[in-house]
Structure formats: C-alpha cells, structure tokens
Length: 104
Image (cartoon, rainbow, N blue to C red; front, side, top):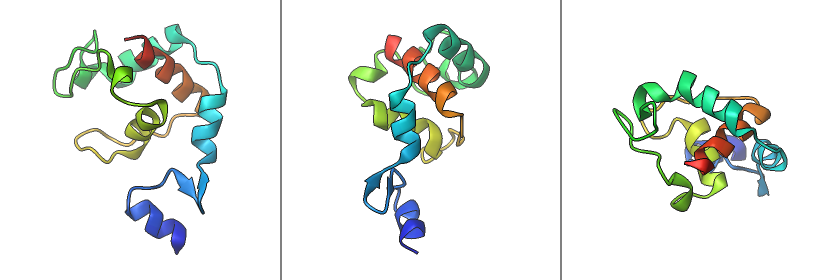
C-alpha cells in the first residue's frame, strides 16, 4: 500500500524511504554519448527535434543546466508530463541517453 501510494503521488523514486535501485544503477554506469545519440534519434527526435531543439516537445538544449540527473531519469521513465510517453529503458540504455542529454 505504501509503495502504491508513493507511486500515485509521483514519488516513485523512493522505495520505502530509500533511493530507487534503478536510478542508483543508472547513475553507477558510464554512459556512451554515441549510443545515447542513437537512442535519442530513434525514440525522442520525433517530438524534440533531430537536434534536440524542440518540435512538439520542448528544446532539450542545455537541459542538464536546469534538471539534475535524477530529474532527467524520472522525466524519461515516468510519463508524468503528457504527451511524453513513459519509457522503461534498461539501466545501460538510460545511462547512454543521460550522457547524450548532458552533452547538449
């Protein structure tokens, strides 16, 4: 019940008061910017633009200056800002995408 309530409140980062193991695993991995760029092109560019400068979705240029790594992971995986869909990438894929987003 606590986990369900936390999820409904949008605090799914935490599992009974502890940081989410998925987020911790992503943050422990070294991401590959080239792979992240390819992932972005396949999954994100349709809305955020080929150069991440925005189309349907907002520009992601300099996004890491405004959002923390944890916040970026949550944004990608949560689906809480429609029309952005919820994604559940593997930790390595998320680490690669995060590295690319931070390079923008």
